[in-house]
Length: 383
Ligand code: GLA
Image 1 (cartoon, protein in one colour):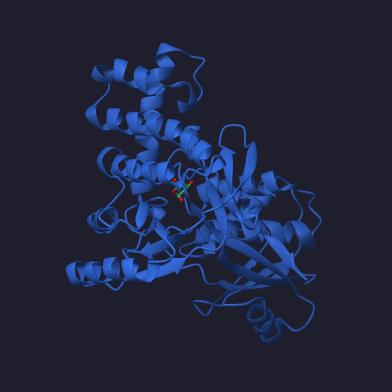
Image 2: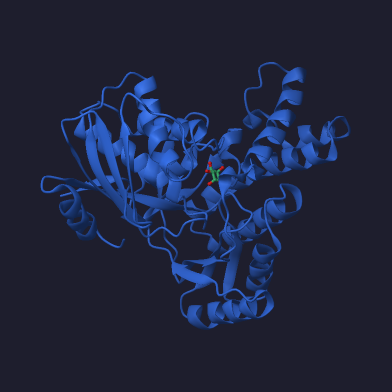
């Protein structure tokens, strides 16, 4: 689906008149990867690809969904919300958490669909969860603020799809601001919008087309091993509540007490928290060259220490690094596939990205997709 009109039209075909339309964006992340669930800082931005919802109450006890992109319909009695398989869990999770928190929602009809490529690390699932929470808040006057909606969407993801994700994706989707990224403190949820001034550069995503899915267990393994590391440091000092309090020096001091896997996770997290603070300073000072260097460092850490990259993503970054016109590149999001994010000179973008794409295609026999990033406002009603 490509527009709010399409959502509305499909709604009319299925349910008639009277729907409101909402847009919920996907996100990119400039820096701060795999640190949102470790108490770090992240630098995401909402993008102009997302999910549209056409939705209205139906004065019944039933929620009717039409998932336009997969051409599937699904109905559920509101007093019978149970975990299922597939995309249904993303919407059911939101209903489940709202009910668990005693918010009263009535029946409704909803058509949704969008243009966030799935499995590309652009948070299509968070856009769906955050967008549904936002729309229901509006329809049934639940009185939730954006932070509460983000937390509900995160809990929804933890509950039915079962991925122990951090807060970044849903928070970015709900709090985006066109022309800006945000520096989000994932401990306090304090955030600051930073103007995204890229001068002669632009952000380009290359989708490796290696499909990544967060609920296949690999992401939760990262989470568990990080928590194992954290628990060790908590036995040394019970005031520690997250990795924010653990410097790289401290991790190195206790290297021999940790298994090699857990040490690698911990040192990456401590470095990345530090790096994201530096990256925010670079953005504020408009030092994009330095910012780009940090992107390469993050990729190295994600690949060699946190071990969430794959050969296709590593190849894309290695190729990018050889180009004078690419000043920064790294895998983005949960990993194991999805996109790289590249900071590329506007002037030579077509040639440079074209080169990377064709050599990738030659080596892996996969045709990658390229998206030029445009930022957008957070989840909103389209009037
Ligand atoms: C996924 C998760 C986020 C975050 C990133 C990695 O997108 O949903 O919470 O952990 O991976 O930074």
